[in-house]
Length: 234
Image 1 (cartoon, helix red, strand yellow):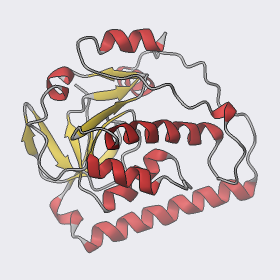
Image 2 (cartoon, rainbow, N blue to C red; image 1 turned 180 degrees about the horizontal axis):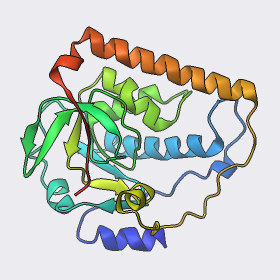
Image 3 (tube, rainbow, N blue to C red; image 1 turned 120 degrees about the horizontal axis):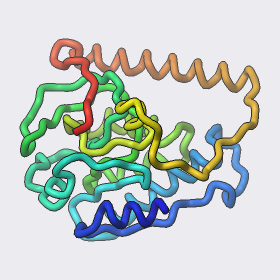
């Protein structure tokens, strides 16, 4: 059902569907990630590898529960709006408050340097350098993919946020519109209870990560050249 919907949504656009990696078939590992987090990450690695193996300059990666904003096709079919030297463009919004740099016009929207974590990997554009870096930094993952891209990879590459966003996930859109979600997933989350030690370790890691981001921003004077805002969807 999701495939049929995405086929209709992307009708007229050149795209390739990748079968998702099945988390239930992955071998056991000592990774702190769940099998489904690893499977999601491996699916994105496959998409990045497609770009590396091609002669294309960019790839747009979409997950299969997205809604697309106005003029999505116009942006995807024309790369002239992508500034030279940019490695990752986040097309998605999670409706989080994020810290953005000064706006640069891109058609009838704006591009901003993204300085803080902005969760979600449902829709983004990678350059060839961005794809190489993603593949390098996800070889032995200790965190979910969006925690690796935002902000770990962002510290080493140029990452932009488009605003208003062109992509939003179904569950986020549901909260945005205050209406029931339209796409129900058949993938069930694991009900395995985590130990108190595991929970404390994860929460401690988050605190450390927030402190690292704060230090990174302070060293670069980001607080004085950026603004905090929620990226809306249009």
